[in-house]
Image (tube, rainbow, N blue to C red; front, side):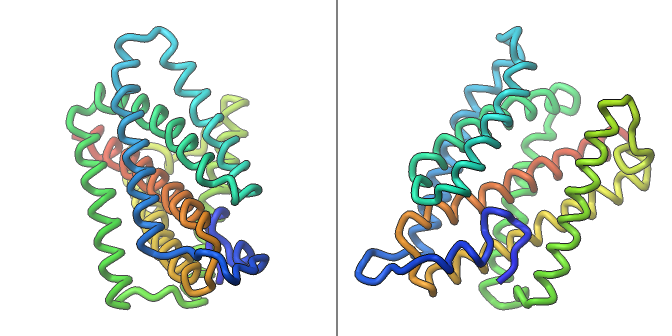
Length: 243
């Protein structure tokens, strides 16, 4: 089972021998995901006002995702700590999302509500399609999403490196037709990663993974949802800037 989400790869399950212990379930993972979403939402709510009240909001917006990344790495290598690390990860990501959403809202009023609505609309639509087996996580499907996600990641890394030298990749990050099409493509790929995440969680229950893997499954799903939300926010901002 391949997945482009580094937190949710097939090798995660190969090491387990869970006989006699309580196992991971889909319902348990859903509950942990809801808890994680609640933590993100609450921390984002409190961070929202920082853009108006704190002179250090810019610094916090840089440090929060860095701390979230560190906690994510710890979670990946210490999956048994997921029950502790995932809520902490959710706090840092919530702070980052609250701040960056606030900045976008200042420039484009109403954009955050649209992005949140679109993100959950995509989530439930794909979940519905997956449950009905309209969308299937076949090996070719997985390989295609892995390749596309890797290409996007490489593009972002190159862009970040070039940015240190004052060089920007033309067209794709602008609000022109090419930039909008690129953002739309990224949104589609981010959305399709959800299908791979659903497949991973379903297989986790089938393999009888340990109970703490419910938190780990929720973590992987949160990684994809946060990425999807940010890309939708970016796409909407490009569309709004053309009005």
